[in-house]
Length: 212
Image 1 (spheres, rainbow, N blue to C red):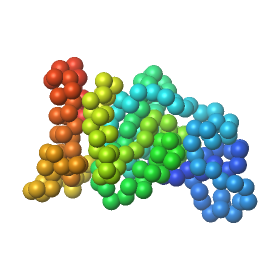
Image 2: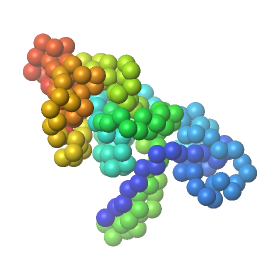
Image 3: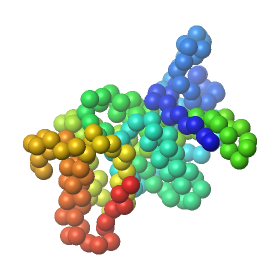
Image 4: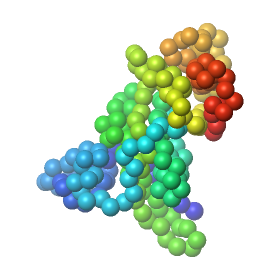
């Protein structure tokens, strides 16, 4: 079995080396520390798989470590191995930590995934820069819900992903009106997304979305 960890804030030491989480050992070093982004990654000489530009095909409600270390990892592999050529836009399902979106966008969606464990009887201890995420948006910030609805109307969008739990699908009367900006509950958000898409394409059967 493999254990995966997605680090929220990556740092690169100087102009060499690989992206890594800021840790105690790194803090003791005297060289400059830079935030991970495409420019810095190029300057380090990183030779792993990277996809910088691609259409956003996935709207993902949730920006936590599980989704980024599991679902988004497989999309990254699909880009590399199967030519999927798609990016994921992360949508924060609740607005209690908008700084997380800032951190992800500061790194241009890039982050380091660590895989540790065993696979087919062999020890695995590997790291991979994930590049399938385009950006992250907090819809509770003024104007950002419109950005989510704009993606709902996109020709490129194919899939909506969420790992919303029971707390996220609970109904509280009055907290998820259709025209609320944004609706509070996940079902209300998804309903509005689907309605916007239905309107944009006049209900065309071939413009439906896969919901995961």
